[in-house]
Length: 65
Image 1 (cartoon, rainbow, N blue to C red):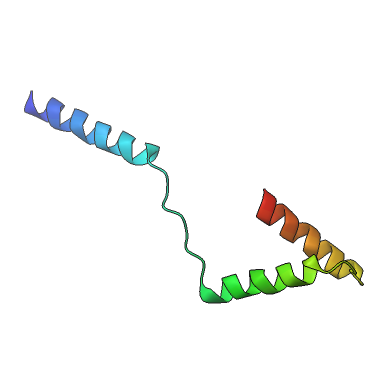
Image 2 (cartoon, helix red, strand yellow; image 1 turned 60 degrees about the vertical axis):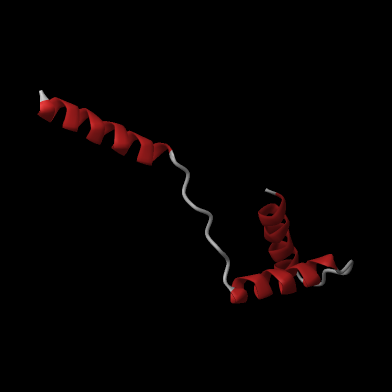
């Protein structure tokens, strides 16, 4: 009888662990600086190369989506 109670408690705890969301990942200082510099490049009206256009498209999707 006690083993059934222990088993049910273990299943309940394991089920709750699966329902809780993962904590958000904090960005490092290097990642923040990179995003800021990419944002500065993409905010300019004149985008010169195809690579810059693709970079800005990915940056817009990442910030908006």
